[in-house]
Image 1 (tube, one colour):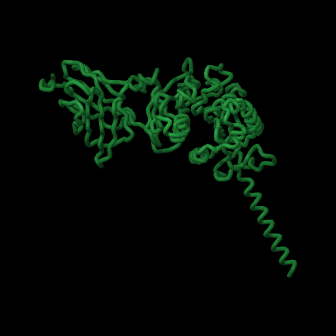
Image 2 (cartoon, rainbow, N blue to C red; image 1 turned 180 degrees about the horizontal axis):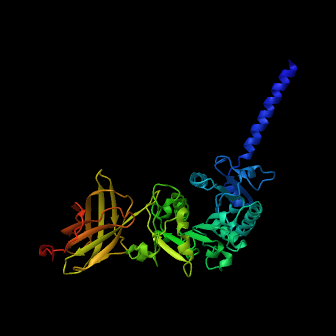
Image 3 (cartoon, rainbow, N blue to C red; image 1 turned 60 degrees about the horizontal axis):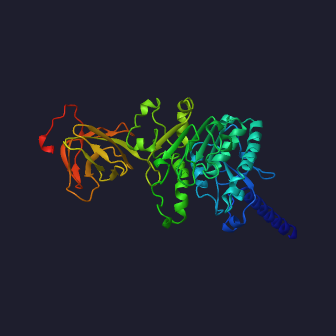
Length: 467
């Protein structure tokens, strides 16, 4: 009897030991706090591996006697996710989501580079000084993978802020032969103006794409990749606080938006269309929407699938392209682009702004106002083409509401005689081209119109619509 009791307790302790050991193999991202930031942290790196086999239980590839290598299949594509500066020590809020979204696409090796011990400090340049050391640690793992049959083509590095430059340093160690680097708002302070060997550069990988969202503060302003995306011009992201009253979000929201834009590209809900252009103003003025001239595939999309345009981008001389676009304020951030064309009848030139609201058959609405920085100039019989952007895409538009304003608060109200207004889709070319003919817009008065398919006939001037 005593023997049986002892055996039972032995089995219980054995199972508890198995449970503890099993728990120990599940590694979490290092969680520090402001106390650690004040004291500063020495560099200690974890390489947390996730695959579809262990999506909720990361193994640390750098740990002594690590069992995580059983999940590492070097014949698969490997994606390294590297964060940046951590002034408060907390884990990035997006880490788990980006892992899950990537693994929902394909069974990659996803390796989160946790250098929170090292990145956590109140002194930014102390963290920046550790970036090359992190890169050296990554090279040690990649060398091991290469010795076991991995290829440089299969290495894809996604780096955030300082992590973008870490990715670049790794790429330089392999003479630019790794497959791809995506830089998410690469850090600007201490890196701006430095030579290519001291920062991310397009020569660091076979394909380098960069998303700039905070070029006037924490991010890098100039081009770094084969293609550099500038959402909303690279500054003042919609939905982010505009004043310090927004608290900590005021300082980090624009910078962090690059990550959330990239993550939105991993969804099936929509793709974020971008427009190669010389500058943001030309994009806003609708001068860069002829995507067929850019490539047979059209204009590139932002994020994960941008490499579908790799061949066209790398072949350019020099191999650097800037792409501009606007986004919505909330996930999934997509905007649907239209040309809004006006032919007006006023004998005197009018300058002003157009607001247009689209209404679907089920009553949903979406609205666009011409940017206040870009007043339109309406001249008699001369077509003006505006770039209209909406956060919803309607298969059928039942009504449009149009308002014209000069922005002036003094003087007599103006009217705009419109011979033809035309709405042409850019994003979704399957949508019909819609028109309205012969109507008057009174300043600051919303006009309700029912759009109709455009006529292919000569326009007839209605003298009553002229001044």
